Length: 576
Image 1 (cartoon, rainbow, N blue to C red):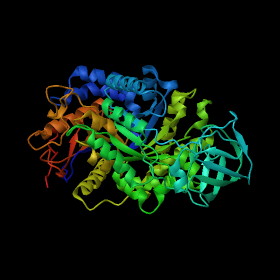
Image 2: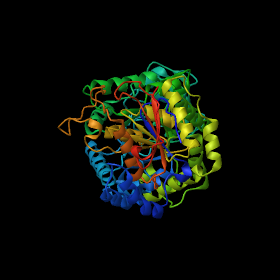
Image 3: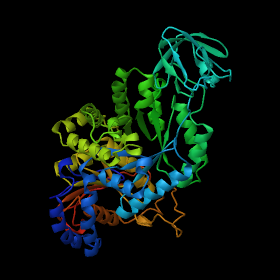
Image 4: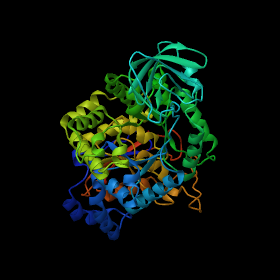
């Protein structure tokens, strides 16, 4: 039996969705025997530890869609974080709209404690608050009721408001608004139309009446405001995030590509050369994101996207939101960028132990659409049933991904491969893993770019990434079908003497690992540890670029048995 190698650089992919993890009993029976077979990689004690740990985390290999859980008062203990992790959470969101910076650091430390306990990378997403546009205050502390058809003024006067006017302490809104523009107050509960735009005021006709009270939010769906996405608070929070080491930063209030360029410049200027930088996630919640080629360029500039359906649903008609969600997901899949669907996924579970059937269908739709991850907000942060919410999403994920139609939906919307050696390698590795019923597609990845290309192709097996940097492993934990191995300090030679002074500069041929067999042995070792293989003859498809450390040197695919590269004479590799 002989397999021909093709080209690639950094990715190891894994087996079919229904066979991601061997049953626990079979795994326990065979893993020690297999561990002893892998030459120079594992000892019996390692295998014993693996058998004990796998039942708790093996469920992760049964799914491709990831979960993001927001932490808050209902989930601010290490015990609850561990519970949510074991229930299926892959990413934890720290919402900087609430609480202090110090509280976020405490939560991050708890997450890292759980990560260390299970030797499994956990991604941390820091979410910036963004500008909060609000009306001023009223003389009546209970606010005022606006009647449909009446004229109401918003101005810059700091005097408290009444039933005829109120302060709008945002001159940018007044400047950008034109006759016919709509303003939404209090998440759209009150809707007004501009009938006169003065230099320091807006006279508006009430279209949908209702109560308006102190400091209620204002949305401007028709206007592009000349304000930065980053408030002074956001800049302080971003600096703090860079200091504590979050893996992703979510940017709110994105209106145009220039907003992404601004935060990237700040991150670049505040990160020492050669050191780790967090990924940037743009929250799509403004109609201006869909004007012209804005969406394409926003996706191109950032590392990932969040479909923030809360404000998006206020600023756009409700009937448009499902279409916009699919549009965003399709654009992200086309460019190979992770996309998270968020807001009101299981809203009723804030109070109820079970979701509505409409909510279950909504979660399933996001999965069928091909989202990389689905996110819980108040359900896990402040609800009465945080564990049950994560468990319910996990059940929906498992059910959808076991549906025979799921694969056909993914394949129907699959983007065409790019005419590049790397994409050609990924397509070849995907087909090989399917043809030989491999248990995983594995990739050695420095920065994760090739692994993301593999995820873009939505293979029928898990994608296992071996990374020298824990930060890369954590960032990849968000992506569809990707399961990175958390490296031990000094893995693959990428560490200086001081563990706190990791060198994240781009490797060179001189500093990169030179032993391809080391990569192959670690692939087999990691597959055993994760419960992906239970028999020495189980196959892995390994992709790599030789020589290591050479940018773009994606040039080899190798098929190896789980017992290790030295245990199958029929294995060969052909370099380009």
